Image 1 (tube, rainbow, N blue to C red):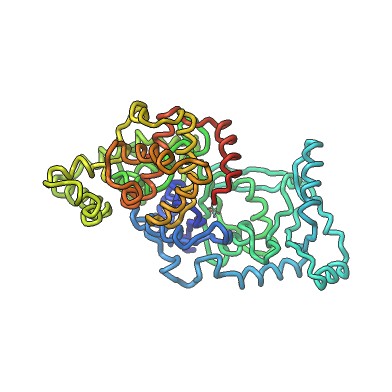
Image 2 (cartoon, rainbow, N blue to C red; image 1 turned 30 degrees about the vertical axis):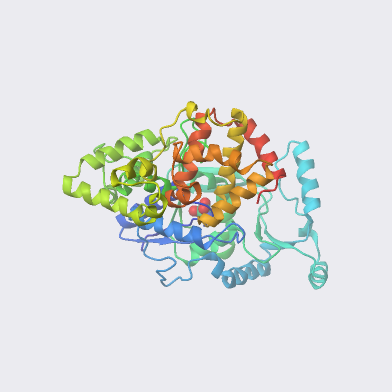
Length: 494
Ligand code: GLU
């Protein structure tokens, strides 16, 4: 049997270091066993998925050197590798489940389901579908279909007993069937849910080992049951411990930069990021801290995966990056530096912004150094020239951050239009609104024009700089975030 693993990210938002982490372990396991590593794009959520995000995933894997054997743009035997292009297959297999009686159509309205949820919650029960539509006769179903009553397809699950989940890292985990919902497999619009598509695709793509985050353990019974209904062999399950923030909560961009591109733009080396991610979940037999991807592949053993809660600590990553950098001779160091600089804005794009402001070249560096900077060195005093109260400055920065986080196009026009629209909706004068953003982004009192500069600096560093200033100004607590989110929603920015 040829080992086949996959990473299956959803192309929504910026590629996450968690995706790199799963990709790394899936890659190492496959390569160690002479197998294939596959990239599958899980874009069933058409509203949130975008081709830009898919491209960013591919670029990030490429930058990291985790090359896949099959995937979009590298079509193999099991193409297509994008779920949105596989609907014909899901339709076929859902028919099979309906015909065997292992799935059923559910016509319950949203209101009924909401009522059910509330009453189960008030009784302290697990919230799950109660199976009402299982009692419909064939003729009832046929009539509803001919009347075009909207419906979903759900899977049957056993009423009692336990499901035995065999996790390669944790051994046997038993989950009671009465805790497992009759999962929706196909939505009203005929598109599959994750749980259905993942099973069909992992089977058809001949995946032998599924390496994914531990947050999916509770979903395993649904998947196992589906394999059983179809009579397919169950792949091995390996649930990796989740990466955590320093306070042990699940790694989130609220507390830590999570975008792979952020690390790339900040000047981290891909080999150091991979090494760090490897180190978080695994250890070399000799205990070395610095190891390359090839070394990790050569020594890879599932038994060396640690099940603790790995803390993603940017300082530690920075230290490791320094170790890598210092290990290079000057020639190699120069190559690495130049390759990073080449990814940076070209000098040519900066010229129009500074041409009118300088007379000799040496005046250029102070004006433009912030293009190459990571986080600007600013302090609270830098915000003293802003007339608003600290709380209002934080609000402007936080709202701008949310507003920019949903932009998939990072052109000057989009940044300009979305921020000016936000200023209008916040009833603020443009100058007043832009001042704190200007300081957060440039860290200076004079700099080239804001929107041009933001375009050049790029989305990841701009967002990180806004966040950096928010933290500097005291940060936003969970409670405040909720309050701000409500105001933000009410001003209808999107
Ligand atoms: N699309 C899922 C995710 O992004 C994949 C989970 C899995 O590996 O099965 O988390």
